[in-house]
Structures are given as structure tokens and as C-alpha cells.
Image 1 (cartoon, rainbow, N blue to C red):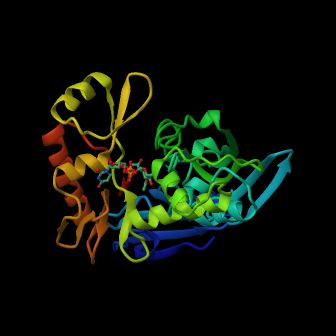
Image 2 (image 1 turned 90 degrees about the horizontal axis):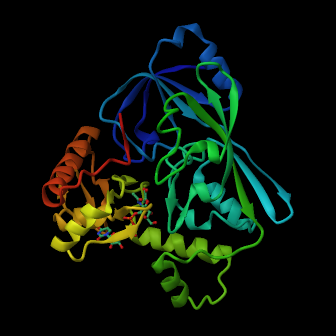
Image 3 (image 1 turned 30 degrees about the vertical axis):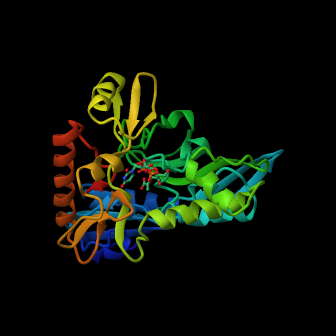
Length: 337
Ligand code: EPU
């Protein structure tokens, strides 16, 4: 196991901010993890697990060991109409979605083009356009840091909810996901509840859309709305959509009749953070090297050579505005280091 020193993380975070890791290990197998954690010298060193770096903001250099998860490999097996698709944690999420679309395995197509790695996908239960990871998740393998043992987690054991799982809560920092298995199907029923999908299908005259059509439509909508991290640094939605009690919502709605909202679990309402931020005048606003995206105020962008701190401070201004105007505290979706 080779441990590199003083490694730049600039190309390993989609914000494209400059930060360095004091130590860095590229992990290609579960055995690599075992070797790494058996090493007495690194036991006391602080560690950070990095997947695709698409949900992380580095505000400083990392004074410890960055563990870059790079386990590759895709395989699948069928049982009747069910398909179990497995991928190493280091596979790029969208490559796996493309694989499923090409093989006509249904279930992941609405999550086309989400940045990030497969191993990170269960941690925050990624989702888009009416589908969440938990809808297709079957199980995952994870390395227990304290014991070096591999444990399999079933869907129920992961405690998934909106942008959340057991890996972000009770078991935070205790396990490293090495492989994920998804349960897909050869029987396809398109999910078009998200309005813009049906609209775009109609435009394309697709009466009986295929898996490929849905993937193509979702990719089209995303490209129109969200900046490509390859050209403009960003980490997708910077904040979560707030979930508030119905009582508070009714109060808010009387002051702001147009407030965008969605049903949530019993007694709660989900608000569109992008709407709240836009109402505070932040949409498309640039301050120095950072700002919000012109087509989606929930996305903070690095328009030049912003530092992580600059981006963080900008996000603080947004939090303060939304707090002030709506009495709602926005929570960051992005991890701050
Ligand atoms: N809106 C505005 N102004 C904005 C942005 C949004 O008014 O600047 C309002 C609009 O009314 C819009 C509504 O908010 O209809 C919802 O916006 P959008 O459809 O863009 O979705 P979102 O709730 O802002 C969520 C996810 C995205 C995902 C989209 C589509 C979160 C935090 N974000 O965004 O995920 O792509 O839905 O399903 O849940 C990500 O997590 O990085 C991400 C991009």
C-alpha cells in the first residue's frame, strides 16, 4: 500500500478548489483497505474517505490521510425479471447508470448524470427526478474500520430517508462502502411524475418511452438547469430542501402565498430551497469568484479561482438571508471540511 504525501485535491473535488492532503492513499480493493488499517503508523492519523468529491467543500488543507475509494468492477445476474447489478464503490455513478440503460435494466434511468461515485451514493441516498437511490438499492458491502471486517447491509438496515442514511447518522465514519448491489428489472414502467419529464417526452413525440428515452430526457433537463462541474466548479444542490411542520408552513403560506412546496411525511411539508433563495434575490448573483447558478439558485458555483472559504462565506450570506426573511434555517447538503 503506497501512501503519497502532500497531494493536491484540486482535481478530486468538483468545486475545483485548491486543497492538499498531508497523506493520500488510492484504494483499489478491500484488501488495500485491510492493509491500510493494519498499519500501526497510520492508526492515530485522522482520516477522510473521498469518493467522487462531488459533495465536498474543502475550506482548508487536510492534515491527515485522504482515502480515495477507487474500487472498480461492474457485474450482474438475473433472477426472473429481477436483475441484481453490482458495482465497486469507485465506479462513477453515471457510468453505472449508462451500463444499466444500455442493458435495458430498468430503475436507475431517472438518476442519469448525477455526479459522484457509486460508493458515496447510499450515504446521502442520492436522488433526482422522482426517484431516490433507496428505490433501487438492494444491499452494500462495507468495511468496518474498527475491526477490519466486511459487513453486508440490506436496504432496511440502511435507514434511508431524504438525503440521509445510517452512514450519515448512527454509523457515521465507522464504515467504508466498498461495493453496492442494486435491484433492477427487465420490466420497465417509466416514472414521469416529475412534470418536466412528461413535457419533454411530449415535445419529442414519445408516446411509449423506452429506458433510453427517459435517460436522455433527464440528461437534457439536467444539462439545461445545472452547471457541468467539468467547466464550472459546483457540487450540485448546496443545501437540502427544508422539511417543516405543517403548522409553520400554514403560517408562512399566509405571508407568501406562492411558496413552492411538496408533501413530506405525515405532519410535514417540504419546501424548495431554490425558491427561498431566489426570493431573497440571490439567483444568478455573483460576488467575487463565487455565486449562485443562473438557472438554479440552490447551486453555488466557483466562477473562477474561489477558495473553499470564499464559497463557504458566500453560503453563510444565503443562510442569513433565508433565516431573516422566512425564519427557516437552511442545512447544507455538501460536506464542509
Ligand atoms: N426553484 C426556484 N428557483 C430556483 C430553483 C428552484 O423557484 O432557483 C423552485 C421551482 O419552483 C422549482 C422547484 O424550486 O420547480 C424545484 O426545483 P428543481 O426541480 O430544480 O429541484 P430542487 O428541489 O431544487 C432537487 C434535488 C436535485 C435534483 C432535483 C430534481 C435536493 C437538495 N436537490 O432540487 O439534486 O436534481 O430535485 O429532482 O433535493 C443534488 O442533490 O445535488 C441535486 C442537484
